[in-house]
Image 1 (cartoon, helix red, strand yellow):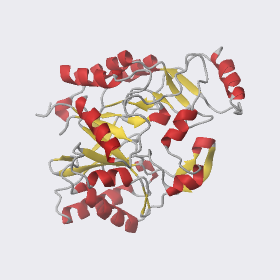
Image 2 (cartoon, rainbow, N blue to C red):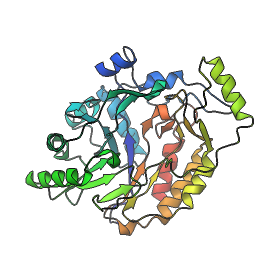
Image 3 (spheres, one colour):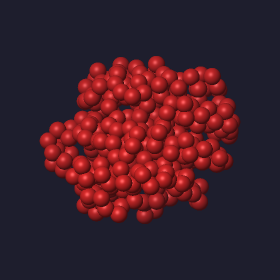
Image 4 (spheres, rainbow, N blue to C red):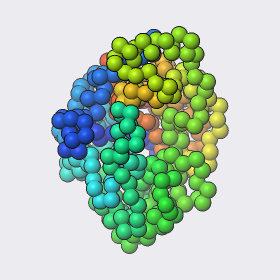
Length: 360
């Protein structure tokens, strides 16, 4: 293992403050919390809604909210945050929390960035084809984008490997020529005085050309799933719950899996070369999706610990230049996916994370 201990990197969602775009699309004052509080159970023993405990319904425009997040992360062994970054042909969105962190040296938790380069659509209310913000790629935009990113990369708190800023592309498959984009970025970084960039991807089946320095076993891995739970009773319960909530019971693919089964499947897989490990404490996007949702049912800190301990004990840490472990996520509340304390589990997931990392 590298000299430093395992560096747990928690994925961080910045959508906990109002912005004009969301006001126009979803109504005045919309934030991630808007969906969270409207969630309801759709089947027996379904854990919804996920409501925050220690940190409350925070606003990430506020220094005290960001400092509270960072203190909690540091107290429980989280090395840094990986902030989702949004860029649409020069249009920046949800950038306020990270920009205010950059301006405030009291917020000293290390950070990196992941470009969430998908289109924004009305998926939350079933309108997949209604594009709100579209990604358009070009070499000119690649150049403008990387020069914008240098503002972050030059920050002393930005996570680097051998002096190379770490930057992640969420969906490389959406690019017309990913090889050309990465080559341009690397060349510009060297011109700007960096030795290179340490470039990774989150969702890629195979990096056949070897154009990235690393990939992430980004969880939950929707391509590798166990058998769904029996719908004999559950389907009727879901239909009744949807009717009660005024939702249509369409033939969309509503998938519910047992978290324990999902963990067992992930543990059975071999670790892959140049791929950092990933883990998720849970998943439930019914707060965002009225239909076509995906649930990992009955997640517990004990089951999460089983998975985490397997990774920490068995991953070939010496094969990588760093000891990153990516946890998805710190605060994806509308996807039931958070280390932050909730009303049901309190600090249990954070305490489990800290315990396993310390013991190993």
